Length: 67
Image (cartoon, rainbow, N blue to C red; front, side, top):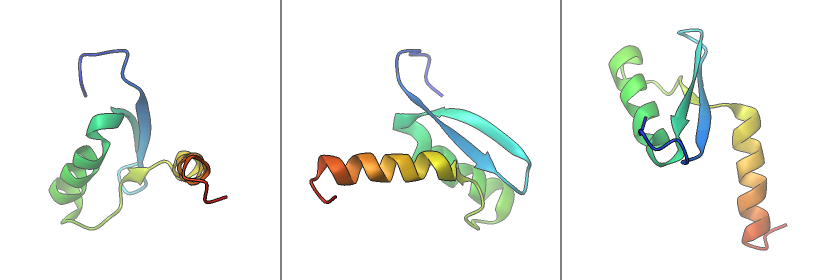
């Protein structure tokens, strides 16, 4: 995570580890990939919290006039 507290963060959850953490938006993809590679042999287990992922998808779709 970055030291810049003004950057938005995204909750990332890992059901296998039973953990949730806040990751800077600019680092979320790399952080998830590193976690899954290191702890789950690359299997896609850790991910952005599903509720947040759905909200982000809706926002992007609306921004692109897809809704």
